[in-house]
Image (cartoon, rainbow, N blue to C red):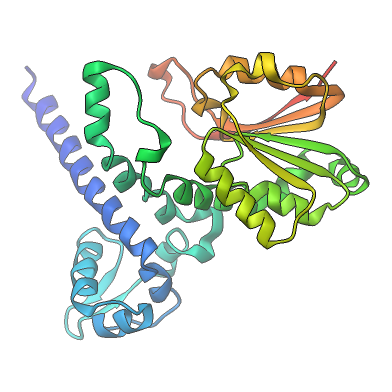
Length: 299
């Protein structure tokens, strides 16, 4: 055994433990609005921060201690006033939009809550249904709101030349794996002459999507709770002008069947647009990130 390599690996694990704790604290900072309350402010006391956020000062003070020791927040030791630098706020507040990393830290405590069920799956097989993941769809909707909804009109629609004009005239759009439907509901608002269909496995997500559509008075969007594992057989042939999967294919139980179903459901000349993890089963490559791909017209 190489003692230097062993020491370096121990340091790596210690960093992981500290960063895991930081994610838990950052999730709390996001959910309680503490990062937002501190943004664009002069240095504040813990009482002032708690007052701005409407929270208990004692808990805010402990949270600030974690933020200071992790290098997120700066404290003046004489005045005991805390400051969130603008360079940090640019990646931690709701105003940061798609750059808000704090929203993504919510996945860490969320996934930790199903650890017992996952351990049982290791022993006996099977799976853990969506219903056992607390707040999953709320967090996923916020994720989608940052990464997709925030850039829908400015960056995503322009990916396909002439798409906005086609939507204005009227086309039929399917979003497979639509989650809580925020993207489709926004599209339905923008383009009343088009028809939109969202499909997702989760009944809870579909319920949320339908409630939002009803609240907005939308008549040109519908949501269907369905397992897409057999979409290659059940898809209505040539029924959609445009199909999207927004960060959804990698979550499917049978992704190839979903893709075959999409090909089957596209009209001649229709377009499929995918956003997904830019990953590889060759784990030694360690490729990360998300990528957009226009898979082209159906021929």
